[in-house]
Length: 283
Ligand code: PAF
Image 1 (cartoon, protein in one colour):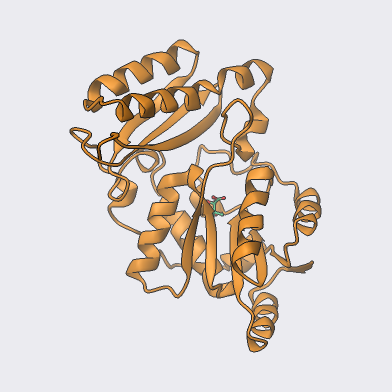
Image 2 (tube, rainbow, N blue to C red):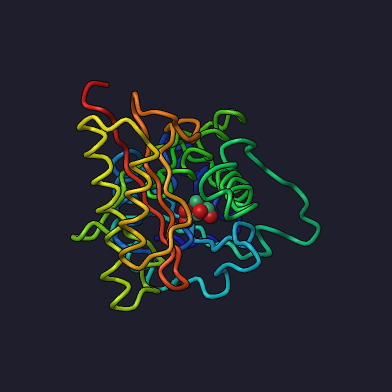
């Protein structure tokens, strides 16, 4: 497995594959890899001849009071795992390579970030779109795989790719879960044993809401009130619990077709997110 730390090195490698007629998939990550990420790499392997995984803890998507400094960095272990699942190359640039002195460009999708995580994390999605566009330019992949756990992120990236005519196909990959339903996340390692036992309430609650929607519940307000109560009773502090249109991410007034149910909640200092799709049986 090749490790490239500059855009030039990565481009040379990828263009070499291209002249041989090979296709390339990219899996952007911030490292601290777990089986959820490896699943994205495995999916990418099925879809293209070569896979590039980027590992870059992107400062521009963290707010001033967020966990950029303490975000786990496990580069050697990450590379060992990637090698085992057949990743061909890791792109691991430095912060100064990505954002050299004098950098002043912004890349921002305007409406989708006005909901959900975007409300509590101003500027977060502008940081994501900026870095993802730079990663796409560096790698020029045919396709890129993103996990649905970060559902709003995937929608924002899909929109950017559409609006800017980026020549890359975005592939959504279903959320990978622990046996008790907790969505795999690099931040789960912050949870102590008690918090780890509380955290599965998120998926249990979302699944219960999805079942009630399938069984005919139409009123988002009462579903959300009951869901919030269940999560709060388990000791978590709810940032948002929303039932939204899966494309626009706007709250729905009544449930008449496919919706997405999304949650963000805090357990101590750790912020967890999750989401599921739902639709009435008749829709
Ligand atoms: O989902 C992530 O890990 C990050 O937001 C991403 C897409 C790698 C951009 O830094």
